[in-house]
Image (cartoon, rainbow, N blue to C red; front, top):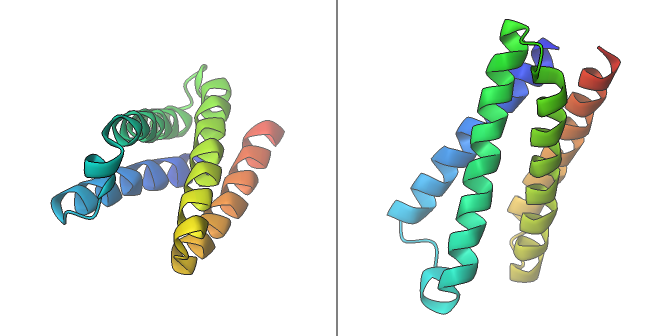
Length: 117
């Protein structure tokens, strides 16, 4: 279960770092074109990142609640991956689409490992 724990912590942390970078670099034009949509998207992704980090720590510590909550956080991540994949495919940004495919693959491995443990 260490893989799933570390994966959750790393992905959750990188989600936060990515959004901080995009926001400070001014790479979120949706604040001008779709402000309500992007704010709700940021809230959802922030909650996903926090859930991933908390459950990753819980898994490492062997907390009794961590397996079940980890599956919820992983479901949130899968949704975020699918949602973001559509956005970047529409924009023609294939690098990010490839990155999301890899994240989806490792997310599924993480889920399977949690279920089997």
